[in-house]
Image (spheres, rainbow over the protein chains, first blue to last red):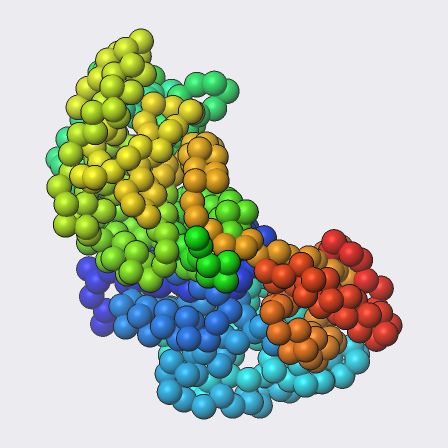
Amino acid sequence: MTSPDKIWTAGLIVIGDEILSGRTHDKNIAQVASWLQVQGIRLTEVRVVPDVESRIVAAVNDLRAAYDYLFTTGGIGPTHDDITVDAVAAALGVPVVIHPEARALLERYYATRGGLNEGRLRMARVPEGSELIPNRMSGAPGIRRGNMFLMAGVPHITAGMLDALTGQLEGGAPLLSETIGGWIPESEVADLLRQTEAAHDSCQIGSYPFFRDGRVGANFVVRSVSADDLKACCDSLSEGLTAAGHVVTAGGI
Amino acid sequence: MTSPDKIWTAGLIVIGDEILSGRTHDKNIAQVASWLQVQGIRLTEVRVVPDVESRIVAAVNDLRAAYDYLFTTGGIGPTHDDITVDAVAAALGVPVVIHPEARALLERYYATRGGLNEGRLRMARVPEGSELIPNRMSGAPGIRRGNMFLMAGVPHITAGMLDALTGQLEGGAPLLSETIGGWIPESEVADLLRQTEAAHDSCQIGSYPFFRDGRVGANFVVRSVSADDLKACCDSLSEGLTAAGHVVTAGGI
């Protein structure tokens, strides 16, 4: 039996010089975050670190101690800058081994693509004690070791791996959210937002301003694990904004 | 006099529940990273943390000790979930004070927009000992305190603040990069990449595979602070790829 009140948490490590140089715009934070929400798991911290073993090891050890699950993206390919497996094995104090099933998968995949070479065989290496995460997009699988999940850096391959993990992880009640928006300067309604949040214990209200078509607006996102509390809080906020003379759009702008 | 060989480093903390929920796709990591490259400063670590004071404090204390500069984005607006100033002040052990120049700026800005209220006055609060970073886009300024820079979360406002800081920070030689691409499976050339990098001491080679139009390709990014070394390494890699029968596109695909 699981406790329905437990809040399950996850950390994510995005590995790669290309993100820290600004060359590549990360897409994995948002997709891992959205996927975790649906699993009833809260993404609680993200770290982006370079392709340097000691830096990956430090992040792995910090985050695996702090959260229920740890995900990584990047650095599991065939080239010399792909060092995630080595770093995770070092962090756990276990050797790197060739996973026989991964080797067989790669042999089949590359049978018609020039055969298995040293670089390609790198993608069968795992920290000892690991299982594989299916990859329907290309040859190399992701890696699961206990509550750690090592995934690809290329976003659509990561998406396939997440899909394969859907429903496999224990989670809690998903965090629900509802958005209310308006052409409202958030600074005019800051008091109302704070008071409304304070009056609804299980809810958080986030305020996200925007500037569009030369006008100022904001979306207010209410979050709660309770559908009833969420509705009560949204209704109260909506009434308050309307009473203050604002036009409110359900679902946000 | 500055040492030309010093590598200047920076950490970035992205603050906000909206990034960790997947609701908002972060754009600040890439724009801060790219801007830092031009200043001769390397973005070395990013952390994304929620709107929780203790979590921001911990990240601030970790990263300000580890790097030459620390940037934050998000949480400096007028609403109750904007707690970056309080968290940074707590991390530094200094009080939060009203910055008189920020107050004057906000008074002018809101004079024709309904006047200064309690929420808007929040945006004049700074950790004691801070200067302001100009904001040409909207009323509230960014905040500089020593080597820490607190910036907006809305990307185009952040962009304006970065622009105001251009050339103001001491940095080293900018990291140069050159890209070579091809419709080349990276797993076929992993050995060549590793050997080429090993033969060019001051250079790093990153390999970034992609799948496009049903075909497999990769871009190889060579980085160095030395223009001569960069050229030598790129030439060598390009020759190696060509000798292996690949068609190489300078600048990448």
